[in-house]
Figure 1 (cartoon, helix red, strand yellow):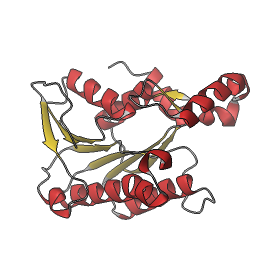
Figure 2: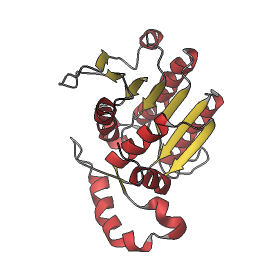
Figure 3: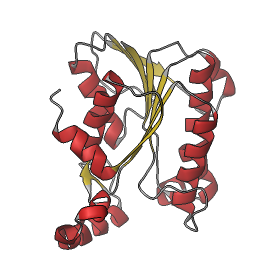
Length: 221
C-alpha cells in the first residue's frame, strides 16, 4: 500500500509514521511536513508542504489511504480563528484533494465529544469537520475520536498535564458507557489507525476512544 500522512511530527502522527514504516504492507509512506523530520528511511518520502497554499494540494500524489493527524490547541494557535484553520480548514482541504484523486480511504483524528452543535468551540469545530468530511462521500471514511492523549510531546501543554492528574483519580470510576472518556496512549491511537487501514470498512465509521483502545489491544503490528 502507498499511503500519505499529514501531521507526522505530532504526537499521534509521529507514532503512526514509524509504525507504517515498520509494517511490510506499506511500501511507500509520504509525509507532508512543514520542515524535515530529520531522519530517512527507504520507504519514506518527505514533501515540504505549505498547507496555506491552494496550489500545494494540486500536486499531491494518488494513494491507497490518507491519514490526517493534524491538530493544535487554541493557546498554541493564538486565536480561535487560527485554531480553526489548523483543525478544520487544513484537514478539509487535504480531504478534498484526496477525494479528487479518488483516494478510497481517508482516516482522520478528531476528538471524543465532537459535535457540530456543541456549545464548546473545540468540540464544535471537530464536529463541523466530521460533517464536512462525510459530505465528500469517500468510499471509506474512518473517524477516530480519542479522549485525553497520553505520550511525550515536544511542547508542554499545561491543560493536558492537569487533565492527566485529574484522570488518574477518576480512572476507576470510568466504567461501562463512560469508558470512552478514559485517557489513551497516542501510540495506541496510531496502532488502531494502522489496523483499520489494513481492513477498512465501507462508508463512514466512527471509533470512540474505548473502541480505539480495544482495537489496539487486539492488534499485533
